[in-house]
Length: 149
Image (cartoon, helix red, strand yellow):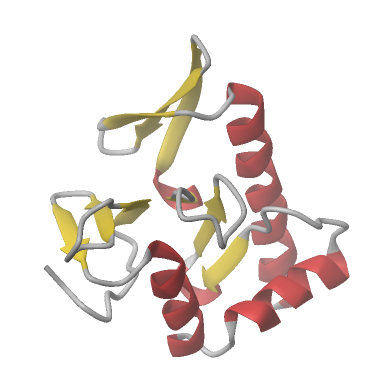
């Protein structure tokens, strides 16, 4: 269990937990970590830790690209760490997926199966189209931000 979780290149996904004590389950390359922090709070705190508020990063993406919902977030651009939400960032059920960790996405009967670089897979209740669109949008943000750096 960790509080003030630091997102690193090992971070692959952050899932909400429905537990009294623990609010997040964080999937890393070699382990799963639980945290008392909510997924969105982890995202916001890590944005601040790496130089800007979540709102600032979101506003920058919106300024350059015409995205209005489920905005991909450059968490730590210098380390090429970008994340995207599966739902509204403020939704309790929102899962945060990390662009650098995704190998591919498959369509499986109203679910999406996400295969990570380390071979681990997760199934989420989200259409393949939506996950793939979010992944592609995050790639656009990555290209944009890295051109600006």
